[in-house]
Image (cartoon, rainbow, N blue to C red):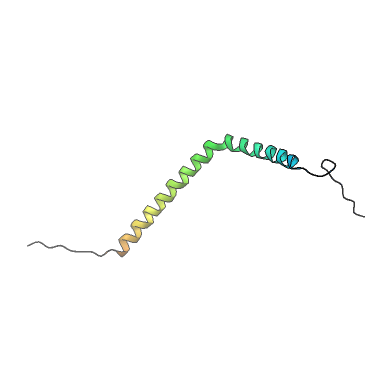
Length: 75
């Protein structure tokens, strides 16, 4: 015995109903992003600096192991 209940407005769903619902959902998301914007930017900058530092260190390490030692003599 399964009965289904509709929880929305009676009748067909219109384009205006969908737009209204999407605007309320999007508004909540925009507010939460706006309140966290500084933290998101700071986290992105920190991640970029960390990635740059790791690539620099790994590049130096690989460069030392693959580079030839050249001895220059002047007479």
